[in-house]
Image (tube, rainbow over all chains, first blue to last red):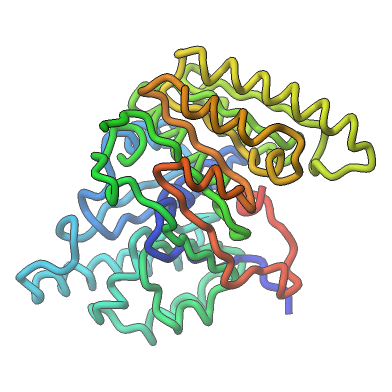
Length: 174
Length: 174
């Protein structure tokens, strides 16, 4: 069986998941290929990324979904409603046939917290346009997603500066 | 002790090391901060990356060093000479004070293969300008480097499409 479009996952608790997806998107843009980058956690992207992406406005469409920095707010009902709405948006984009790559950034949490139906996500991904690449990032990807994916990389933290009391810095962490 | 400039390492056999460094560089560029990206394996970067980087020509200086795709050619003497020349270049860049971030891409091999002196590299990194960030990528980072670094992420391959007989593709792998 030859599949053209891959499903790629960057997971794990280490740094570089979103950054790798960002790098992938701009690499595709360098080829003139279109990416839709859907960010599932509102507020996790900062000024540096946004400014950089603006240079690729012709090749990269960027959408922000979600309610705030975390999906685990006090208001589970509102969180779940927002998660479902975001997933509906993603489905449309995946099925549109308009893109070379679709990035679902920080998407794994929606499945991990049971906010959307894993079986439905797997089905949509299975039936995606044959040549579309889908890149999913986030910690703790569920087993069904790992199983389905073609390429899975776990970013594993060996050392982290926060452990050593160093603050986040402009241009490095955000 | 408060250090401003971090030493970051992306290592391991998984995907996304160079891509994460690329993402980091363009993120810094989004802030208007300058990066020098030194690629230690000639030929590992392809058209997509180069085209994408061209949009950041004001913020990202890009240098290619090395002799070819691998450092393990038949001609060890020529490889070692090229490695040392590349490292001399990197030293100048690190000490220049001209950059917010210096990326040493696929640099770990030079140490792993003993082509340059690890003790000297550690010393240069220890005495780098205080506010400079240095990002090093490549498989099998030597222990001394891990020890020195502030942030180390291991990209660990869980699944890889080549294992399944799928070919590398434009905009994803290169």
